[in-house]
Length: 336
Ligand code: CP
Ligand code: NVA
Picture 1 (cartoon, helix red, strand yellow):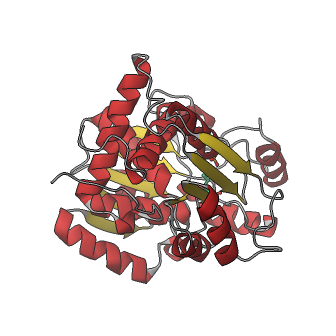
Picture 2 (tube, helix red, strand yellow):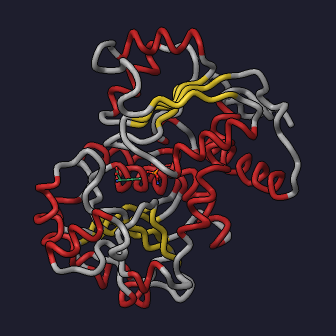
């Protein structure tokens, strides 16, 4: 009996085995290849409908869900941060029971993980986490596919995450590495390390997969021998502007620079979930940069634009992997 993810929610990679994660990445690689060859998959889920709830803004995740759904033959409803009753006039439990009657799948991007868990509890259709404060699991599938494509394998890969490692990206990368047998390093000031309970849980996954987890404040030690250097914005969506000053003070020593990349393996790559403040070409990048006298924030423009950088391959893979994840949880391409 092969792997079937039909009917499953996709809330965090904690809920999936290594084999199930590999199944989704393999399916994504297959669907990517088919798309490149112009092979249509419109029959896969024709006649189905999905709803995308975004309480925070998005470019990649929203577009990936929309394009992927259309490629699979589905229709999409997009609910923007202000465009529904959710949370304000209707509880999550009631919303879930309404949308579950109309749609075949529900995506949610927003705040606490408990919200997407509640949606999943009360809706009888698959619920997909498009980013919460705690986790960003669809980003993980794209990152794993990108690393496998760029470096040839996942097992034994050394991934170093620089920056705020206690938020959605740091947490999710630690889980993904622990599940897949990769060596995870959080490179940040101690108070930006992931939560102790999550570390303990990941240490259990690591025992099974052969992964290692390391937490260090030493930039030289933490970036040495890395295959992948990864960073994210220092202030995430939903956090108050007032934290910028503190983050800049704490995290500037952990910016990804050419020195960091040169200290990693010769074959190392740079990844970032995006969007990124690597220059002054964004409103926030400009405002914060000018206020604090910085031309770039979490990564230098030089690294972002260098040959180390695979961020646009990574962004493209959001679509292929979200397509695979939706298809798998809706039962398409099983036993093929
Ligand atoms: N990486 C990511 O989730 O991008 P968006 O915020 O544009 O969806
Ligand atoms: N940590 C970032 C990730 C964006 C994709 C945020 O939550 O805003």
